[in-house]
Amino acid sequence: MNDSINENTDNADNTIPDIIQISLFSLIFLLAVAYTILLLTRKTFRSNKLNWPTVNVCLATAFFSLIQLLFIIIRLANLSIIPCRLQGFILNMIACQMMHAYCVSSINRLLAIRYFNKLVFRSSRWLLMNISIGWIVGLLCAVPNAFYNSITCLTGTSPMLLKVYTCITTLLIPIHVVAVCNVSIFRYMSHVRRRVHSITNNRNNYNISRKRDVYVSKLMLLTFSLFAIGWTPIFVEQLFTTNEHRLPNAVSLFFQFLLLNSLLGDIILLIYANQPVRQLIKETFKCNAQM
Image (cartoon, rainbow, N blue to C red; front, side, top):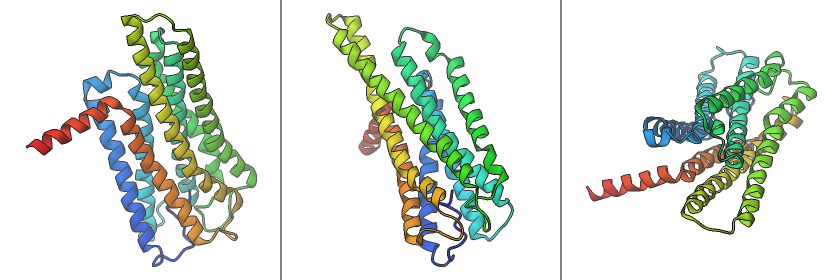
């Protein structure tokens, strides 16, 4: 990705954008890590297995932000400790990991809702297996990028076929998977509501649980939509530009900050979507205000 390593622009002109990028990536990293620690350290949150895919999304986001910060520092220090092809591979790989983390989260939520009574889809083994597969697939999808120059290199660019492949595997397929999963959830819940006629205490508890799952799914779909909006211009830019033919610097910067704002918005939405975490934060602020 060229959001942190645009070597063809003047360093002096990039001082303010670099400061903004460092600040935003640092904030995204801190929020993702803090939310992950909160989910993992409190037994109430950790016991909710559907929080595990969210932790996976946060870890991928934190990893991406950390890598971007590292590459920004390397560029500002004029260091050449990482080959440009390796930089391109790492950036594409971790972008792929984030996209696939959303896929894993959506697939697991769909199965947990659709097959509510089958505990296997909420088991630790099932979730860990899916998360592991997501990381392996993300790594393998990015491997071809290690063998060609990319936007991270001063000379040469990736073949058009590889650019198209990267766009499909990293952007288009995950978008379709997440969209299909969430649409399936909404359609299934609509079908369930039409079938429910009698109301009992157990049915009320069942409906409350389902409504909560659908609410979280809506927020997850909004989160991924925001993510896709932020990433799409970057991929389109890589698809149709070369080192000799680039977009104006102002347009490229706009795409970069659109991506950063979408990442920040995603983390905030993920935190907001978790009602128990949201309630804990409110209570914590109330206690601090009363002291």
